[in-house]
Length: 188
Image 1: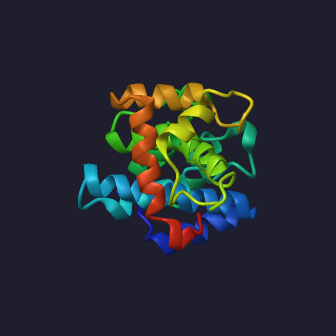
Image 2: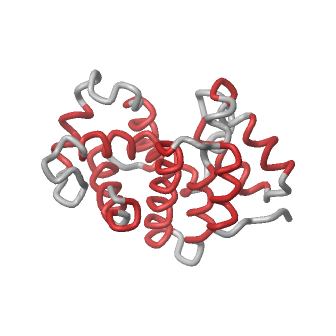
């Protein structure tokens, strides 16, 4: 059994390979969203889910063309646990890796990684510039507008919702609630 780092240890690892504020904030947001869902769907494992969220894009800045591939090697070199390595890599399923999300946490990561970006983009367009007053219907409207936040894959979000057996609308609503828990901590 390998190492499962604490949040602070994982954040230090993340910062070894990522320096851009955007990527560091995205990692913290995804970590918080996973922690929220763990409380609901896998109580007692919140810390593990959060660390998975924090490290999911470990290799993105240094090797975007091998995203979710290079991170596996980096994590193994650090002696991290295989369950953590698998979970983080699974969010690249169908894009760069063939590791299909199986555990509920892996499916949540797959579904919400892109979605948090879309929700964040919608939120900053609002007068409040936050998710505090963001409604699902506002995000659904932008979800149906491919030119808006074009880098956020609607196909991946939809596939993630399907994996979970949720509607896209339900996934968006639940993820907004998760992101609201981060408002003070991450300023979203």
